[in-house]
Each structure stands twice: as structure tokens, then as C-alpha cells.
Length: 156
Length: 150
Image (cartoon, rainbow over all chains, first blue to last red; front, top):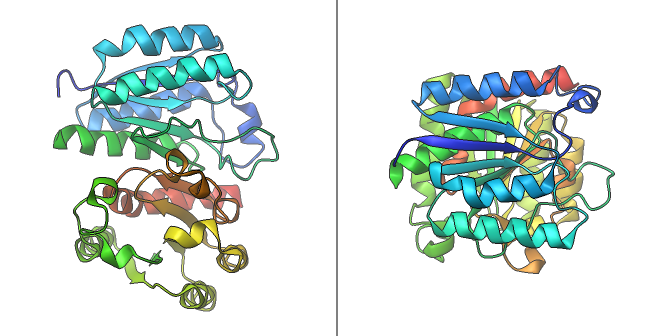
């Protein structure tokens, strides 16, 4: 464990969580999610950088170049790479690089993505990598991921 | 809270079965951690494992009649085959979480289909054996969130 720092990355569309509020996950804004993440990180003495971007290229670039400063990645890919195979390739290669460095990676979703009637909604598959997956626990998806990352970092 | 933790086929072999995927921890050890975590938080955790599909269906039906508050289910290989377990879970209205030790979506393509995912509230996978106790630890909060949802 180098600097106890997590990167919590939120993908395209997550700046506005109002559509989740209609689906019964309580009143959620990205600020509320960030605050809850900060509280949980504080319990475990972890630092975090909480980011959101609607720009897929920016997200990939940050995963590739920015990860050096972090010990783990929690990512809500949201709309990321469900359409573009180019973006998928960049994403999966970034995730492969991160997991090869033995940094825990967990994919989180606020809702249960398997209950949605949205086509192309599926976990982002990066074969043969160790990536955790948490979906459908609302704001607690992030909470559970932070707890799991903390446990993993303390074992490494 | 009353909580059922239901485990499917081959999970009794944990610790010796493909430890590079599932870890070296035995089911007995995971069970103890879940029950201990439950005791700490005031939950009554029943930890079960069966290699028989019908027995798992009956346990879910029991959860309905016993008004159990939450089910955590690792249906293992039945995840990818069992419409019977899907239907039983649909009939259960408490809080339900699908759990896997590894992440099935990153493994063989025959594990990419889950009949369980669309019948549960949430999915937790790939967090290793610790996934169980993490879920139990959060269940009280999660149930509140679920009640908001209803």
C-alpha cells in the first residue's frame, strides 16, 4: 500500500442522476454520492479522488496516465463503451494494465443493470482480469466497493 | 434481521476446488464469518449449501413462509441454468442479493448468462470470499434503501 489513495471514476451521463430518483434509489445527486464515498473512505483512513466525465477519450486517458498516483480503481462506467468498440478496446487495455499492477479494480452501478430494458447494458468484459462487480445497491454500491478495496489493500 | 445465505453446487468444495479462482478459504470458515458478522449486527444468519436444485428452491420457498428479511444467494453453476430458482426468487418479496466469489462475466462465455440477475435486487461478484461478510455488514443499511424503493 503506497499512499492509500482510491480513484473513483464516473463515466458519461452520471453528472445527472435524476433518472435514478424515479426508479426508487432515493434522492441521489453525484454530490451526495461523493460525500458518502468521502465518509466511508475516512472511516478506513483512505484518500480518494472522485471524478466524473462525459468525455470517453478523457476517461480513457486518465485511466491510462493518471492511475500511477492511485492504489485502486472504482469505476462506474455508466454509458461508457456500450456503443463503440474502439472505446471498449482502449478501456479494456487500461483495465488490464491496472490489474497487472495488482491494483484492485471494481466496476459499480447504482441500479441492477440486468433489470433494465436498455439494450447493450452489460458488464464491461475484460477477460481474465480480476475485476469486482457491484450493481443495484444504490449509493451503497460505492460503499461496498470501498470496503472491499480497503480489505484487499490491507491484504496486499 | 433474519438472513438466509444460500449456496449452490460444488461450493462445499471451497478451499480445494480451483483455489486460483475461488481462493483457499473453506466454506466452513466463510460460514463462521457470516454468522459472527450477523451476531455483531444483531442479525440471525442461516448459512446453507446444497448440490440439489430442488432443495435450493424449497429453501427460497421457506424464506417466503418464514418471512425472512433477506436472501444472499450464490447459486453457483445453477445461476446459468435454473429457471426454477429464478421463479422461486421472483416469488420472494424480501431483499435479495446474487453473490459470486469470482466474476462470472470475466470467465467462460457459458457463465455470462445469469437467470438469477433479473430476479434479484442487486449483484455482487468478484470480491472473493470476503464478499459474503461485506454484504452481511451492509445489510441493515441496504434493507433501508430497499424499503425506500418499495
